[in-house]
Length: 140
Length: 91
Image 1 (spheres, rainbow over the protein chains, first blue to last red):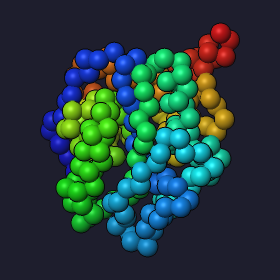
Image 2: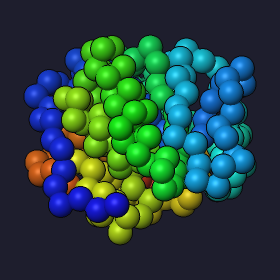
Image 3: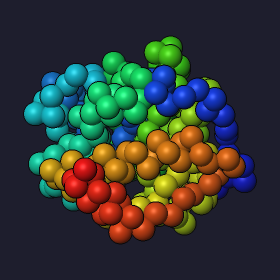
């Protein structure tokens, strides 16, 4: 999929006053949540909500298309959930949003339509309703 | 990932992503991206390397604020992140 232009939101606010959320496509989810579907070769366009106070020990990765053995040891290399709290503590940002979001980044064919028309806009709307100012996205 | 980023930016939230492939990122054209030369599965450094992880995030915040043109991909050499982490460790 190719685009000729990019959407753009100008950031006028100081970072020290901004609310930040993380989004990963690394297949991270809580142990109690439904794993991403690895049986569909076209992937799984759904998402999981990750509370910002979740412990790394509560998180697992379901994604068979990359080696996540290092991320299994330290989730921060994929979803830097503890590091953004460090940034908040240091004053680099104003707030960490109460929730982050995770997708599984192997989405093909008809599932792309679901991602573009349904699940990605739902996450975007949720972040907007949380008054999130800035988002960092990490791939797998 | 760029498709999700585009959707979030469309909602009025300023976004930045880590690119693992400048070629793919260039096609999807998210508003802002940084290429650190990271390996698959390691977008934010390696396990336990807290200073490196923080440096990666601080570079992302810096360029989130500074990138002036939609569709920009910033290229940062791994040595720059190493130097940042070393400086943080020495401070």
